[in-house]
Amino acid sequence: MAAAPGRAPTKAGAWLLASRPKTLPAAAAPVIVGTATAYAAHAFRPWPALAALAGALLIQIGTNLANDYFDFRHGADTHERVGPVRVTQAGLLAPAAVLRGAWAAFALAAVAGAYLTAVAGWPVVAIGTL
Image 1 (tube, rainbow, N blue to C red):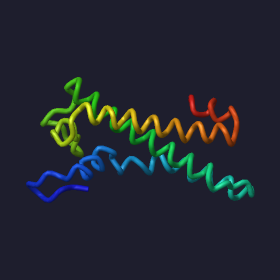
Image 2 (cartoon, rainbow, N blue to C red):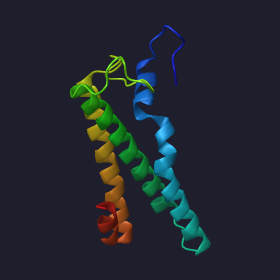
Image 3 (cartoon, rainbow, N blue to C red):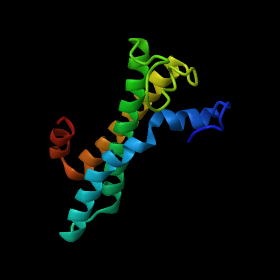
């Protein structure tokens, strides 16, 4: 979501940029494959599938936000950087807000992981730590 030329995005638009939506299919793909495999084996369970998808997407978003924050903090993202807008470097979101967003995404992913552990057992923890 890009703003019109010369206009800054809204706060919601800045958060959407920060989440880097183009990276989300990479997080969703393994969950979709696993869900399709479960479906083919007649073992599909919709709530665990949704929790796994939410967890994967939240981990990706948290990672993207943490990357934005730490690259800014360590000076890796400068005005000379080529590529998509980095919201912290561009001044669209405060660094502390981006870091809090990363922690919030990771915390919500942990909630999804706790649910998956409750319904599928401790092997989920082993897989989640890989």
